[in-house]
Length: 225
Ligand code: 5RP
Image (cartoon, rainbow, N blue to C red; front, side, top):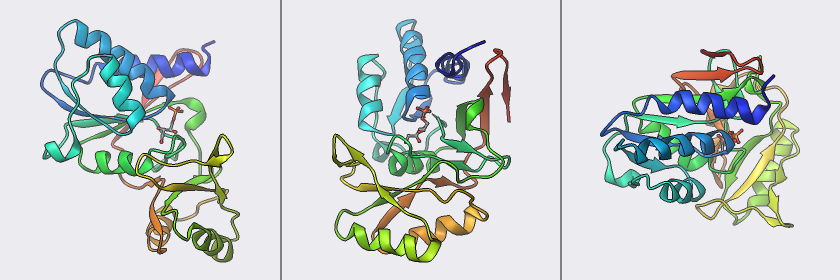
């Protein structure tokens, strides 16, 4: 039986084969994507040439360490594909992302891509979104107003994400509120409602964005959804 990390490595290795010469590729963030970057790094050593648009500073650093050429989102008109991980995936391929705090840049890069390809181990598949606390990226100014709004409207206790006892600060200088909705009945409506709250920059629901999911299982099988 494979460990969770071995499953992540397995799907990442398979997905790396999607990257072909001269492509422009969005590279997600997280522990699954880490293995993707390692695999792409070895392919670059063997002569593969592509441009990577990173979705976080962490990913940019890892790509640079692997000599993967980087470009900025503003430098391209469109991306061939973005490959990323997810925190939850429902049967309609709707996602919760942002466990790593990179949701804003991940969503912008994915939105500019012809295809969003998601990598997952089997634990990420759910019948209904919401067990994983939904990350909400907020402007630090007045963030407590957003927290109150979430509590009053949805009866959900939004917690400020912290790191080393300080507020976690995203690559774009924002805070993250983690919102345990538990069950999200209408993710398409919720995403619009949340983004309409003053002070909210974006939320971790990726609705109608994923084109394909490559999921790996502990017995070593993989399948595409
Ligand atoms: C980061 C993300 C990640 O894709 C998500 O958290 C999955 O991470 P991992 O591959 O480490 O399980 O959305 O913001």
